[in-house]
Image 1: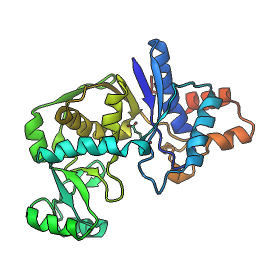
Image 2 (image 1 turned 30 degrees about the horizontal axis):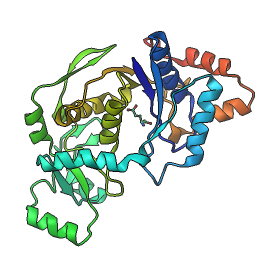
Image 3 (image 1 turned 180 degrees about the vertical axis):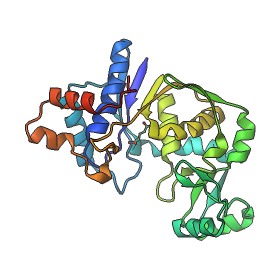
Image 4 (image 1 turned 90 degrees about the vertical axis):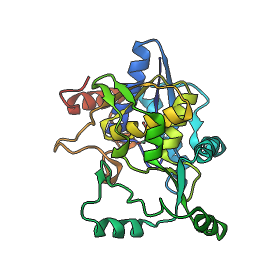
Length: 283
Ligand code: GLU
C-alpha cells in the first residue's frame, strides 16, 4: 500500500496538517507500505520554497520519514499539459476567458444558479462560444483557463463509483462540481488535474485527506476514467477542530507546528493535542 501527504507550501503547517500527515503515515506503516510526501505548489504566486523547507522540517520533527525524491508539482507542468492535451483532442474541454467578477455577475443575475460544495458552479458563459471566436481571442493573447465539459465527460465515462474506507461505495455525481478548471490562466494545470495524475503515476493506492475534499473525489474519479488512470481507494477523514469547534485553517492563524515547537512543545505534546482535539468519530 502507498499513501501520501500532499501539502501546499503556502504557509507553515498547523495541527490539522499534522493530524492529516500522521494519519497517512500510520496507514502506510500499519500495512507495511510506502509513505510519500508531495509538494503541491502549482500556485506559484502563493507557494514559497521557504515553506517547503518548513514542511520538511516540521514533519521530520514529528518523527515522519518519507521516500526521496519528493515530487514537487511545479517541476512537472509539461507532464500535466500532455494529459490536458489528450482531453482537448477528445473535445472534452473548452477555453474560458471569464474573470471572477464576470462569473459572479452572471451568478448574481441567475438566482437559481446551481451550487456545488465550493459555491456557485461555473455558469457556462464560455461553453457555447464559437470555436473561431475563441481561437481569435487566444491568438490575441487573451488570458484563459481550460475547463472540463462535464456533460460530455460524464456521458463518455458512464456511471462511476469510488470507495471510501469509512463511507463505503459512493456513486459519482459529476454534475455536482460542474465544468471544473483543468488548467488555470496562470499555470497549465489545476489542483484536480495535478493531484489525479500524480496519485496515479506515483502508484498511490490509498488516498487519505480531509473530508473537505470529498467533493473533489467525484471530479478525480471522472478524470481517472477519461485518462485511463487506475482508481485508488480513498479515506476522507474528519477535520481536526479547535476548542470552539472550528476547523484549523491557515487563514485563521491556527498555531503552527513551528510556533508550538518554539514555545517548548515536544512532538509527543503535539500528538497528545491531536488526540484531545480529534472528533470522537475519528479512527
Ligand atoms: N494540496 C491539497 C491541500 O493542501 C491536498 C491535496 C489532496 O490531499 O488531495 O489541501
